[in-house]
Image (cartoon, rainbow, N blue to C red):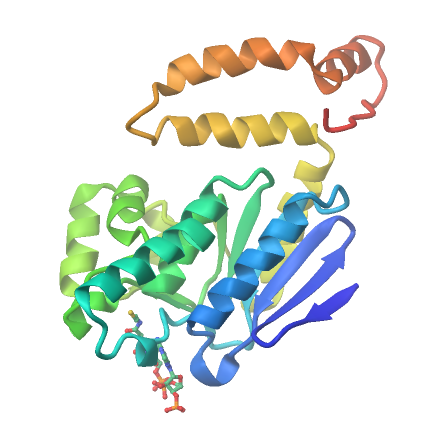
Length: 262
Ligand code: COA
């Protein structure tokens, strides 16, 4: 199944939804329209049982996403700037982080500004070994507004986040990997295959357990929650599910589990 809207292409391949941001002439910069299309696609896919994992990538060889669309930033008022940021958080960045199915960023090229913020909101990051990452907003007199100041420090630590954000410098793929900003590096032509390999492992597991694992990991990064308490609670609740009963029985009976996601 291949579905195209103005700025994104979606293809469902064996329970893996590949979303390609498709504005190669603008290096896949995230404009408002693309944010809306991404949001709508993700909302739809969340209720589709035949979507188990989502991969987000960029069109072409040059860019994953080269940032928010700078042409939409000119002349914003204080209120409009705040609105742009909070709308992005709500519709894409927090939405992806808290999505009930794993989302993998396949970083095929420049991942700058909102592009790095998008990659960091995803659960897993795989990067082409020629791609570059950075948060160059200070070069425009701005700061990251889609979670970059928070998620970068979570992933690479405060010191490196200060350096990257205040200098606006990009880092190469090797440093991104060394710093823990991405899980895997691949050759450009093997990028999607690596994402599929990871996805295919996830697909064999209980959809319900995967969903609750995402929720519980995220709880530890939410100041209002105690991650350990959430884990204890969720660990208890999971014993009422079909998948937990099935998974444990299947192991003891030396057979493959038949998970139903409930
Ligand atoms: N928003 C809007 N348009 C963008 C864009 C962005 N973030 N990034 C690139 N583009 C557009 C360019 O304006 C250009 O469009 P044009 O051909 O109509 O003039 C096209 O994409 C190609 O980009 P170009 O700058 O010519 O490519 P390059 O190879 O010389 O440089 C980059 C590549 C990524 C280094 C450069 O495009 C860049 O610095 N982009 C902005 C990155 C940024 O600051 N992101 C944070 C935004 S908050």
